[in-house]
Length: 350
Image 1 (cartoon, rainbow, N blue to C red):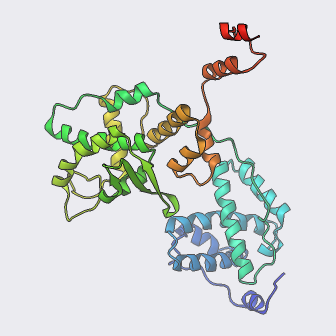
Image 2 (spheres, helix red, strand yellow):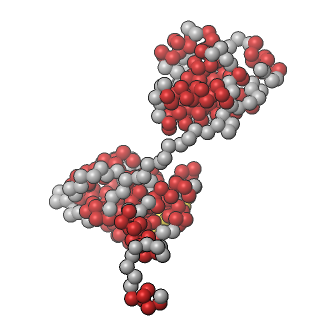
Image 3 (cartoon, rainbow, N blue to C red):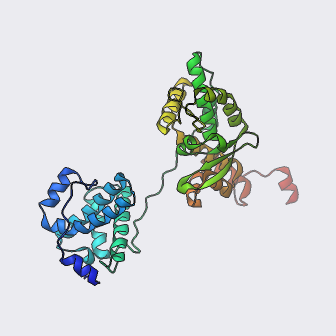
């Protein structure tokens, strides 16, 4: 049911044709839509919405993902001879169930499609083209978040304290790489945060680093002495490599400009191989290790949350797992009905 004169006008007017300029469409999709009047009718509003987002500089990747999810729902509605305004929670649940059970789509992918549907219906309501958002209150059950893999302290020591390479060129690169890896582990940075650091963000005298994280939020994180020493040894080389007054802390020796996240990933794998480490090493693993080792040593969940830049403490809580042997030790020491052997002081006080 339409709910405004503007909506009636849109309903009765000529629907927008599929345009070759619509970046979210593949040639195959465009041909399919052009040949299907009912589907074209449904998707005309989607094209209008995506054009609006395009003007607001949403990325092509985002627009393509939004269209993909809404196209699937449009195909479902067309099959049932329904319109956007006749899609209720029951119809939505049936569609989502089909995507999960029949199409075998991963839960994370269905979550993305549901997000696109939710935002699209919000726009329809703003435009007066719908009254109800069927996604309101609709939630998918999230699968348990897997525990991150963790490397033990000995393995990190094997990586970070390896011998400097014999080749002068490789030795220079290792001074930079060691500084990066020490910083990742010292301060729990994401790799994107690491490569975004400027010289002014690191205070070696105060042992702290200013990090700009997700949502452009800035946080101050302590800097370990090992990381500070590694950065100090790297800086003379950085100052020789830098081109065009680039402010980046970590510089590509070849290009003289800010290092990319891909380069950091590749250099970590090179360093792990050289150190004889068989475990898959990647930058985010060092962040996981920082969080796990900090929590294991301190138990201060709030402080670790602050250092990691997590907006939700539940994200930090995935690092609170402990091995069963340690759990048993704590239990045996603390629980009054445990089977631990009492020490002399226990016996004397009883």
